[in-house]
Length: 175
Image (cartoon, rainbow, N blue to C red; front, top):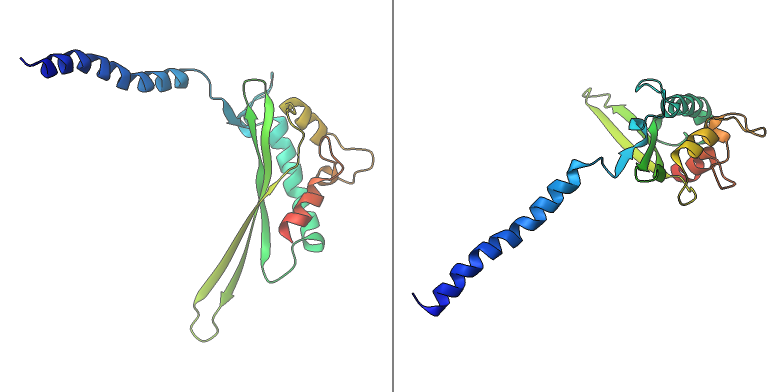
């Protein structure tokens, strides 16, 4: 056996152990709860999955979007606007909002009069909400789920820590 073979034989187990280290670390990291979750999946004490403050807020916002849409931001060559949902990510380490956006889609369909062929154009928007850093999920839901005195609806509530509403954000984003 040469000196080179002897060194290689001793390095092989060490190399295998070093290669397995990242695999063990990532598997170990996955054993605990996820760091980030969808706000829709967050349950406060006493809430059931189908009846959460988030789901109630999302329903109110969708209804108000549908009512405000024709007069406010749903004009132009594309029609049929639909709110998808309020998307928020929660950092589970401290139950803080990491980011939020409001998703909207729209479509326009044309029928060729001579052939009957149908053509549909789709558009989508993901409108980010300007929220303060380290806003707790509980404070966000409480703020957005309470009608403010100068507000005509949840869509018109000022966002936490700011002077703009989700309505203002959508007007800018969808224009």
